[in-house]
Image (cartoon, rainbow, N blue to C red):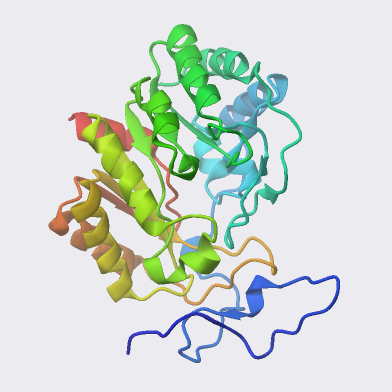
Length: 319
């Protein structure tokens, strides 16, 4: 049965000052219980540690950098940092949007750090990485959404770490395509923008975003000649039929190259609830389906995130 429109739970009660818990919103109208038990064994991640982790930790701290690994509570931080890779988050650590899944702080960012591109370039040179992923918070209060800082950051990496390939995981810039062009003109090796979830769930998963606008961003990036990438979470209220439809929408609307699929993990009780644990076997099926439909590569697994093993995806496409 196809899920109906999103409706608030009848258990939801408003108090003043109003504080709404997203954990009390019904996402699928199917009457299922939300997941509150212990995580399954396949979701147990490696704890941070080791010399590679400590070296990267020191560089991040010295250059006052933000990482999405920490801000978003990524389960792969121990693995990635131990291998000497990380995802750097620019434009601060306060986001102007309030996505229902995201652990990054929401509010009005206090400053715009114009020296950040230089520090990012310098730190990546010290890391001696083959591949780096850069992402950012949304800065909707800025006329260009922070696109100029994005462009200067890529430029600084090219100057200070020319051996490092660059992947950017960008926001939608509120559909300001001139701002997008500033990023595209810097020619990153991979241009990523995450769909995050299926169309039906956008009003709670990405309330300030638009499903079709994200596909349009991917289309423009692909038409500019870049390798494109998008990612989604599962276990947040979608159905497998909706996941297949998203795959078809993205391929038909943009010709996107790479798709990542991972298990949604609820950061706090005030975030959207988990509706199911997707098994490793089902993730294998998502990969098979996505690649049969036309994605050049699908990275699908319980702990997969957009930047997980990103350097291997680049090498795989190049090969």
